[in-house]
Image 1 (cartoon, rainbow, N blue to C red):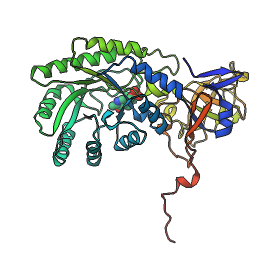
Image 2 (tube, rainbow, N blue to C red):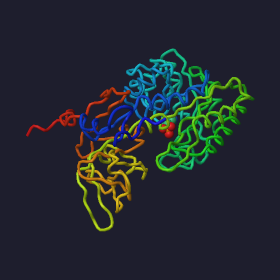
Image 3 (cartoon, helix red, strand yellow):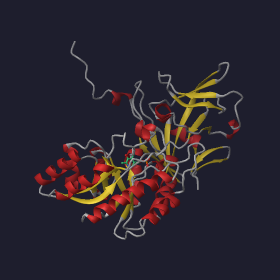
Image 4 (cartoon, helix red, strand yellow):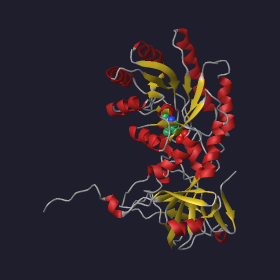
Length: 417
Ligand SMILES: *Cc1c(COP(=O)(O)O)cnc(C)c1O
């Protein structure tokens, strides 16, 4: 099932021709497929019967329409800020489906989360635990908490997106976990509901997940022995997708392998927090070729999308497949090329050493751009951020307008000279 396919000589998104979209809505343009998004969600959801659940990681793509479509399908949400809680509620998501992760929850964010009644706090330190207890006490309530433990497993991913090693800032070290749970158990205004971990992102093997799970289950056993019953085992997100030639496990296999491990724990609900695996391949970035600049060894294909629109290649040396949307321009170019943007940085590229054929005015598609694409965009170089559209069959919804220049300095003030 792929909603991005070539028909009649050009790339289509569901029933819409990509070049028509580019002409109507302009470039650079993020294009999402509702059908692909729905399919990806169902792949998780169908294997997670109650009481298990998936909570979509909002930071991967927080567009209101994306959240709305998922909320409509009954999704839960994993958030990392008060802003993301507000987004979920604005999009029609339920407060009691929200798990709140993140290392630096502020006083105001904790108050807000308690007031709207979220499902659980994924607590990342003892200091945070004490703060949540105190704020809940002031409000005469009790906060549902899960403690994020760092299982110290190597996710074998890019160092910037590995989070489960002791060297990372995330979570409570495993050796301090039991003491932390005892402390949580003793506090009057929090109640322990779960254990939680998130070992990294773009994992393409099962083994690190299963290793982490073994360690988490050993902790669940240890806690049970001292009378602390755990209801939710939250294994975080991190399932990888195919950007190039990676072969991540199928969603069904990933979930079945995890469920098999808790067969003998009838009281445990498995929670997952997928982000990338839900949205990455549900989105592309369309960009127009401005210039082709030949040089001896390689050409520079200069496009109108830059690192401010799509940061992953610059930030992580991430690979994104890039193709000409026209099949007339398929086949390999004679010389390799770098697909580069307009931003004044040498690191501003979308792809290096590619063999894309491209001429001025062509529309290129950057694939798997739905996750951490628009979400990481900025206005660097005073560039307005792209529009986002969602295709649904032959219908198109503008789910975020292209920014206008005036909006970029709306909050700025000049001096009186
Ligand atoms: C980023 C993040 C996720 C989602 O990760 P993906 O790799 O996009 O699935 C889930 N949980 C937490 C705590 C995160 O920080």
